[in-house]
Image 1 (cartoon, rainbow, N blue to C red):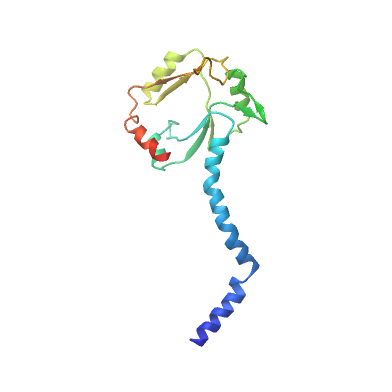
Image 2: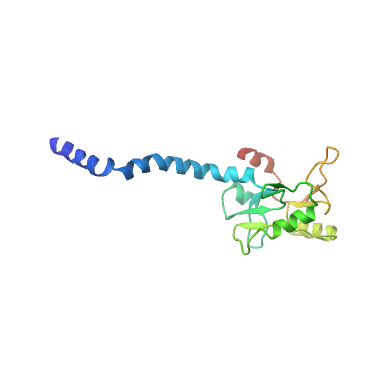
Length: 176
């Protein structure tokens, strides 16, 4: 028993009681906590409309894979409302989109600039429905990022046949 205590004392003095061990013991929980908090903080403090998604091989968003934590997560940026401390919410959408386009480096594996389609809404919607995608958002090119008369200037047009819509509200609620 005495030999065991001597060995434990020696190990304690040579390994545990070192500055590196003490610093590591104190810093590691802090770093792990920051790593778990940082993605949520960045997602809520960003400068515009954005979402995370999982894309399949064709570039189609896969909600169920995202919910199952299966696949590579991509950050999709739709709009830019703040830039270098400047409020861009009163600028026209088309200007904000162009500012955003040139802020995203290409190629970006996990960052996706969500482009726009002008003047071809019906054909675009038909293609969305044909590819079994959720829907599209329609916004006037000159619209600010504000409510006008208590209403937004954009319209979300859902695909009524979207295969991943069923049960989605219940699954989304789990994340909150």
